[in-house]
Length: 433
Ligand SMILES: C[S@@+](CC[C@H](N)C(=O)[O-])C[C@H]1O[C@@H](n2cnc3c(N)ncnc32)[C@H](O)[C@@H]1O
Image (cartoon, rainbow, N blue to C red; front, top):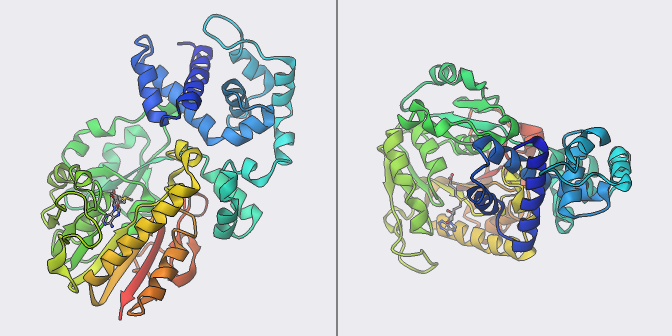
């Protein structure tokens, strides 16, 4: 496919996304399947165009004065890729498989994009849903900080891996992946960072022998730091209450050097299914998976009943809106609705209530989200502390990585792409008196 044909395809995919309201990965997958002539590079390039449009949807539409898929693609090429009107016109050429030529008005809009955008409202310049403006201002304090943070959340994210120190050492893995442009991670000691792939062509990490042998996992450094701030140590009894597919379980097991007990569960037993092969591959032996029988419900049988009052550490990696991961999942920011935020808040409260009785006196409860919204973070912790006077806010474990984020109430830390160079994670540590 020519570059212009890829642009045309992105316009089609965006139109389909709008009309079907299905998630972007599904629409892109179906688009690729229906077009056998599109090779893997074409599919990756089209996906990157679509995701870049989703990242910059509001600002691209604003400068073009239209939110049609065609306008959003043209506007994105101007605002995100810095293309001038001639460069965009070369793609909108009207030739075979290319979009129709730019109109005079479109050319003028692209030429004046930068100036126009400077006068746009905050949520347009920051490309986030208007209904979240109050929450985001609350998170970062003033408009300058909001813009800096939200624009960083519009960038493409690098790929981070966590070297599994149970099986390998970071220097050896770094050498092995040097050909992919691997660099030491700036934040977490076992992290290696790969640059965002040009034109969305993903690195074939899962095919690497090192991955198959369990030497590393793909995991954002924000997630790695959140695990480090728990201070999980060898010999402890640790609960990973919201283990999901086990990204943090594996990180905790490595911190514990496979010594002690690490109990992993989730409200949904199907989510744990992916954990088992990952434990095998990583050589993790200290984990006991405790799937509930059917979906766990408050008041129902507790698969962790035997640990009541006995855990040194309970990690609540809570379900959340995922606003901190918008770099990787830009579709999510436009799909998020106020009702979903309210639902996540209820789930967070339920998970915290479930965690509290498991913690031993003097033990700690670490609450984590991948969100930047204070309602899910500061407010969730404040509400918990008000309901549970037997807990007090505590300092995060000194993981030897400093505190490269925004300080929050209760000694908590908010990591962000702009401030920390990682996904937006929130971490708070609470200690049982
Ligand atoms: C952010 S995800 C976990 C990600 C995972 N820890 C990782 O690092 O890959 C949140 C998980 O919490 C689970 N969850 C929600 N409410 C829960 C509850 N009350 N008890 C246990 N798990 C819960 C969800 O099913 C979901 O898998």
